[in-house]
Amino acid sequence: MAILDILHYPDPRLRIKAQPVPAVDDGVRRLVSDLFETMYAAPGIGLAATQVNVHRRVIVADVSERHDQPWCFINPRVTGTEGREQTEEGCLSVPGVFETVERAERIQVQALNAQGEMVNLVADGLLAVCIQHEIDHLEGKLFVDYLSILKRNRLRKKLAKAQRLAL
Ligand code: NI
Image 1: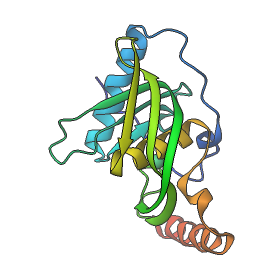
Image 2: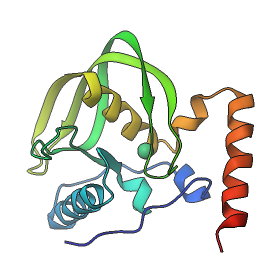
Image 3: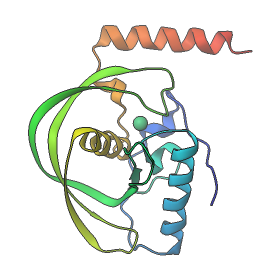
């Protein structure tokens, strides 16, 4: 296992659309292990392969307090949604920024697990938010894209200033 480097906004590689995993083999399982290790070390509750510059459709999540409910989704697809909910989100690729985003409250997801088996899951609460946020990463989309232009400009200025001050 290895802790991988996480790309930071506005790195253009975060905009690359991830490709489907053709077969769940040992290489994919190694990637899943590395994603979990990187996510727990950060620490974070979700991570997409895109964020470590691997452009394959693989995400991991664990929203439990004890870090004992790991979920991995390979080639995930949202097959149903219900309701809308606003949640304050952050992202390991946009450190220090937390903003309210509206998403589906409840989702149905279909994906392969690390054994290559098709899994169907109904998720709500934080796990539903997390899965939608991570699937966005696979599409090259970031949570800050949901903000108003005004808020995004303010954010860009703040990040530029932080970069200037980082010696
Ligand atoms: Ni993120």
